[in-house]
Image (tube, rainbow, N blue to C red; front, side, top):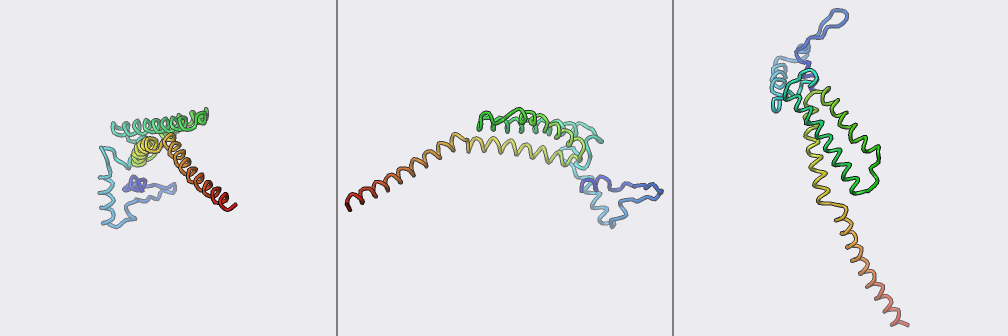
Length: 173
């Protein structure tokens, strides 16, 4: 949809010389609505329908930098938590991936409409917060201690039942 908005109002010329103006596919009402949406589709001065590589400005550059840095932070936090939870599980391949994924992110944020880069930036923020909160609330140490306590409680119940069965067997003999 962002591509449609970005090409709205442009004229495409074909090899045979014929042209098509994209506006002709819409009614006047639709044309006005689309033009209004296109002109107002910005956040923090970033036109979400523009591709950053074609419209470099301060907000676009900040979007690229912030999205790339947040991608790197999320990968770092994820790898650190995996190493903490499973020592030795994070090998060289995972560490290389930690650096390659932000490079992919950088490439895509530069070459797709800014709306996608903005979405990824917000997604990275939520992913970072989610990782931190889940690790605090459900840390492996805490879950292990809880599981051991539940196991001991169940074993006490099983021992009590086994003792009761033994006592009944002794009384019956």
